[in-house]
Length: 267
Image (cartoon, rainbow, N blue to C red; front, side, top):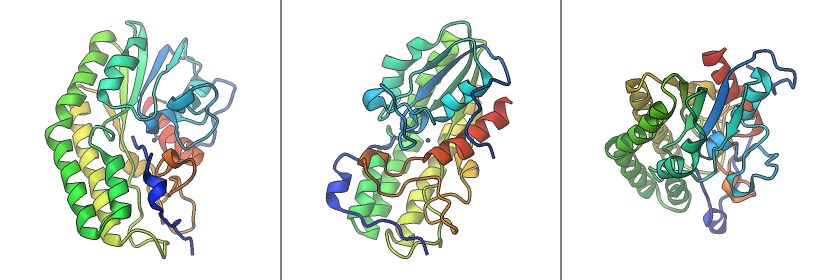
């Protein structure tokens, strides 16, 4: 039986949330126009390793965006997603990479705005009631405040590249409920955290749809590979070191989850 790793207070001091096919071939199969990849740590590939010289942004060579660029040979590729990003960071530091000739934009954003990193910390350190309450607070923010923030980002993307295809990738469930973990968070906490992922999916997909953008539901893409999934083929880290990679997709999650789902949408 797979065991979730124990939690220590120090582990969460710097925790940052915000990520069918194997790794993409180096030989391109499809030529494409300019591609710009925006977003937070789930988009940058934090947790998937091989960060090169990207510093704190932790842009991984195993991230879904890089895998897509490897396999589709876009005319130009701007990978500007950054770990820890919120919607205001995308507007201030990332959308400038989009030009009128951009043909594809991908983005994962919103989790950090709603404070789900702090939610994970509080759920690991607090009681069931505390965890449920913190998730409800984050869910309320996602429903009331996040839509306007997403609209600001999506409007800027559309204004900068009116003809671009935009794919918005959501967040997976973190846990398989009643799964193969004998220690760690209670089922009550795991269910509350997964419910927050459901609310995020509802809000993000709704706003993406309002702009005519494609939405990739990561809950489906990662199904059967969450933490505590039977068989141990988890596509998400539990608590790990470096600590900021906790609860982020592994290289397998980026390729088998996000990249495969992105190819399913774009070809």
